[in-house]
Amino acid sequence: MSEAKNVNKPVLDIAGAAERLKSVVTHTPLQFNANLSRKYQCNVYLKREDLQIVRSYKLRGAYNMMHQLSPELLAKGVVCASAGNHAQGFAYSCKKLGVKGVVFMPIPSPQQKVNQTKMFGDEFVEVVLVGDTFDDTAIAAKAYTIEHGMTFIPPFDHPAIISGQATVGVEILDDIKTLTPDPIDFIFLPVGGGGLSAGVGTYFKQKSPHTKVIGLEPEGAPSMFWALKSGEPVELENIDKFVDGASVKRVGDITFSFCKDALDDMHLVPEGKICTTILQMYNEEAMVVEPAGAMSIAALDDYAEQIKGKTIVCIVSGGNNDIARMQEIKERSLLYEGLKYYFLIRFAQRPGSLKEFVNKVLGPYDDITRFEYVQKHNKEAGPALVGLELRSKKDHESLINNMKKYQINYNEINKDDNIYGYLI
Image 1: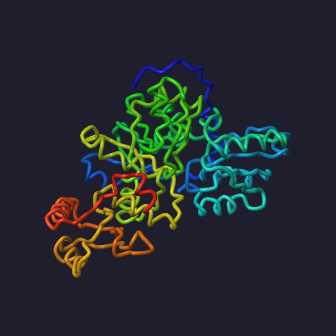
Image 2 (image 1 turned 120 degrees about the vertical axis):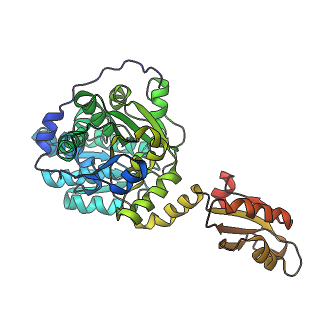
Image 3 (image 1 turned 90 degrees about the vertical axis):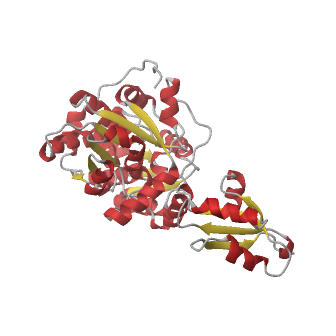
């Protein structure tokens, strides 16, 4: 990574945060995972923040900051902006402290997270949906805060928030001693705005400097990646919002000031790989993991050689995954794994052309998952949208060869983002 510019860092009160949170948060388990350990020939431990009270680590920072506000400020109420997990931690904290809170969430937030926020906050919390991204939502929330004389509780860019998130690291280093005499060689953790990575990374640099701290972002939202390349936070023009718990256009100034020193590597994970990992963890481990929470496990393939024989910790940061998204998750996984393809096909205008395609072009295990004519009128002369699911990635080559052999007029649209986005 390039050398970052010097930024003044505030003091973190991690020990104080751990004490304040002791009776509030769940001390989540650090679990040895036999399947992952066998696969990567190392010792993999999962820090299960998906088992937190609000199913993510975000409660830690929100409560830590709110608990330190004066009674006068608490009486005026608090505001937050969140893509979901911070909102739930904030809402739980409002109810715990008996404080009125207003939660601003992006309009595309999964309904499951909206409902959970209302449930955790009960009558103490009001939810307002506004904006398309977290950044849009934050602008509206801060304006509301000023207008009503309330206190804004940021999702990541505040020393009290960072200190609260750092308590994940405190628990990991306390618990690993009871599980193995070996030190932790690598810790993998997701990066969104940078609160978790700043807090845990800094704590590990102080208490376990031997450990390599690996930050992970989705490929479609590489804000910390480019901040570290540029030496300062930069605002991305466009981001893929799929990994909603780790997709921000700009990381925090304070979190960046810590991350530039605390992260040993910053790695990008394809969204499709994340989806494959979500399905893998559900099918093999009976774990419900959200996209951001799956990144630490999804990245292990790219570090397979480095982690052989080592002791590894992956922070599973959250488990707030809306069941309504599972079809999209499966689709993205199949596309990434090279098992699903979409074509625009102009079938020859003669009897039996479709039958020939099915019987001669498709392989014995190729499955048509979608078939529709693109034109509403004169369908016989227009292209058909055909979706195919393959059993093996290598079957794609024989499929294309058959297309050419039988002179099928086709366009493969998987690689054309514009056409794919419009039609699929």
